[in-house]
Length: 310
Ligand code: ADP
Image 1 (tube, rainbow, N blue to C red):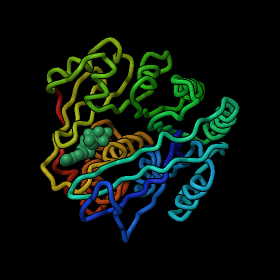
Image 2 (cartoon, rainbow, N blue to C red):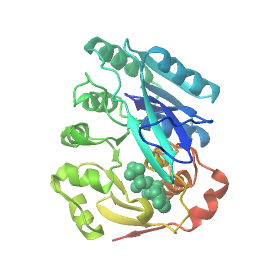
Image 3 (tube, rainbow, N blue to C red):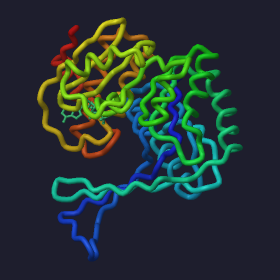
């Protein structure tokens, strides 16, 4: 079973508008509301792949209830810990081919709520074979909270796929117990190494060979329409993808993580799970709905992916 962890989920609201008018009233006929947050996007794609999962994390208040109802309606298993402050809303206004987002920072969690969650994870990990951690930490959680999850996973010998950013990512890569796989984008790699920008694949390759990252077994740097650059088995691989029509790339990184987690869960070889992950990212980019993929196009894209050593 896969356990996904979403520490700061959200109810994602999207308002499609023909035109977005500032400083006046905008009316919207259709508002889409879904359980969101990176880890829940990962969970939805895993569910579409028929991989068994339990979504864990923290929820509170009426929006927390909404998230549970939304996942239950989709037939997904979850085991959230309840917190006293309310889960957040994140709003995306879709207008003129653009997306304007308003992201609430969300609830502040207490130390005792984190302890309760950690104990719940301890139980859940008895059943787990892969753990997927995505997204930012809520206010109140220490920056090294994911390190505690890495320690628990290490104790139980469960591989962790980590997709976070900023200080919690830096804390995890510097920790003794590393994630098995990390999926940053190029900007996040630059942030980790304290450099302002990584300009090309050659620079990225050098960055992936830095001492800070050397003990993480697999690093998959997703490069949007350029595919990915991967460090694994002491080698660097480039993943090339065909050009495709894109509708909404938001959540493509999460769909990619779902593919990586799924491949590891199923014991697939590296090249196979890389292809799977990149194809799922592409399929998500072709959909309007974040965390949704149309698997009818899977095989066609899969055949066109090239993975080669650089
Ligand atoms: P993140 O959202 O984490 O920054 P990316 O934007 O790199 O992740 O997207 C993850 C994957 O989704 C890419 O490796 C690619 O497979 C696919 N993808 C994303 N954007 C595009 C695009 N514009 N064209 C083709 N594939 C894309």
